[in-house]
Image (cartoon, rainbow, N blue to C red; front, side, top):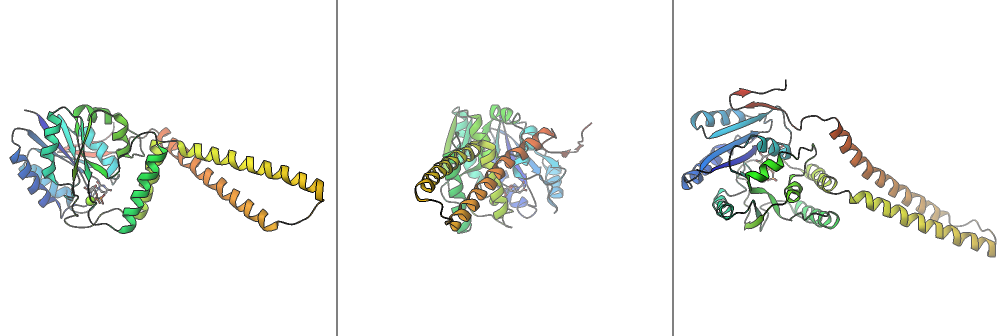
Length: 314
Ligand code: UDP
Ligand code: MG
C-alpha cells in the first residue's frame, strides 16, 4: 500500500488543531486504500499546541511530529518536514484549513497518473487586506520579470510532492529560504489544479506587512542575482550621462566663458546619485549578508524531539 504523508507546519494553532484533525480523519477514512501519516512540525509554538499534538499521537500512531527547538518560520519548518517524511508522496498544507483537505483526493489522482508536483492554484485569496493583495501582485510581477525561473502567481505551498521531489528538496538547505521558488527550481512534472481559498477558521494570520516585505526581498535575492546587474547598468548609464554632461560643459565654457550657475541642478544630481549609490550598496549588502549566513555552515534548523525521541547534535 502506498503511503501518503500530510506535512503540516504549526505555530500557535491550539485552537485550530481539533477541527483540523477531524477533517483529516474524514479524508483518511475516505481514502483508505492508502496508508496515511500526519506529520506535524511544531515550529516553536508558545501555546499548548505541542501538548495537543502529543495527545493526538497517543491516540493515533499515524500521527508523527517533529518539535523544533524554537520558532524558525514556516519555510524552514517545511524543510524539517521534508527530512522526516516517510511517505511515498507528501502533501504540504496549512493548519488553518485555508487549504481544503478535500482537494487532496484530486491531487492523488494526478499523482497516480504520474505527475510529480501537483500544486493548487488559488482563484481567490480569502479575506485579506487590499494593501496586502496589491503588494503581492506587484511582487510577483517584479519577481517574474527579473528572475529566470517561472514563479507561479497565486500558488502557495499547498501541493503534493512525489518522494523524488522530497528527496531533492532535502538537498536544498539554504538558510534563507523561499520555498516557492525552490519548487519551481527543482523542476519535475508539474500539474496545477485550481481552488477557492477559504478564510482562516480561527485566530489570525501570523504575517504582517514587514514579514511579507522580508519574504519578498528573500524571494528576489534567493532566486536571482539580477538586482546586482541592475545596479551595474544604473552605474553605466549614470557615468555615461555625467561624462556627456562634463563634455558639454567644457565646450560651453570654452565658447561662452565661465558662468557660476546651476546650483540647484548640482544638488539634485548629487542627491540623486547618492541615493542610487546607497541603493546599490544595499543590494550588494543583501547578497553579502546571505554569503555570511551560509559560510557559518550552521544547521538550517534544530529539532528537539521526533515523537518520543529526544534529538540533539553530538
Ligand atoms: N507557521 C509556522 N511558523 C511560523 C508561522 C506560521 O509554521 O512562524 C504555520 C502556521 O501554523 C500555518 C501556516 O504556517 O499552518 C500558515 O500560516 P498563516 O496561516 O499564518 O499564513 P497565511 O495563511 O496568512 O499565509
Ligand atoms: Mg493561513
